Image 1: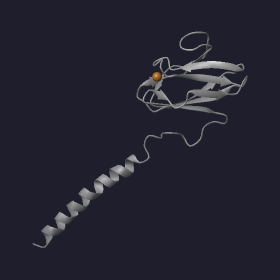
Image 2 (image 1 turned 180 degrees about the vertical axis):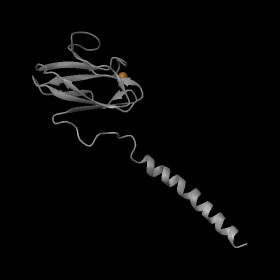
Image 3 (image 1 turned 45 degrees about the horizontal axis):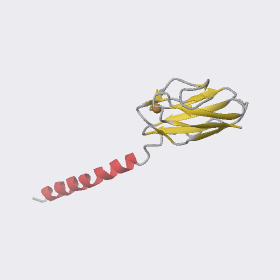
Image 4 (image 1 turned 120 degrees about the vertical axis):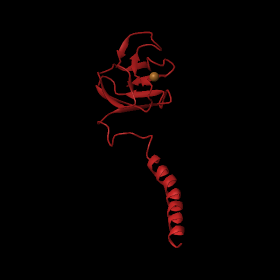
Amino acid sequence: MSMRPATLRRRAALAFLVPIAIVVACGGSGTPEPATYPPGAVVIESKDRKFDADMLLVPADTAFPLVLVNHDSDKHNIAIRTKAGFEGDIIFRHDPVSNMTITLDVPPIAAGTYHFLCEVHPTMTGTVLSQ
Ligand SMILES: [Cu+2]
């Protein structure tokens, strides 16, 4: 007779704890960023088929690491061109990636204004200011 209430209490306690454990486990998700980026890195993130920046400020005539943090299972890439959309010359591009952080080595870009887009989702666009 005395064991039965104790068992019930234990179950009730577990039922109460499980949702808390789930909340704690989910608290840090959505930010799969590495602890550090390479020096001089230009970082852009993609989530829900949107970039988190519409302008990239890059150093003129200097190679730099471009870090793409793609939170989506959708594939994204970054193509830098002399004109908007698929127009003009390709300055830089890489193959699309999904759900990962990738560091890309971008060769020196002459000073000027350029355009970037995701070739998979051409509405994901922005400006590159090389100065
Ligand atoms: Cu995309």
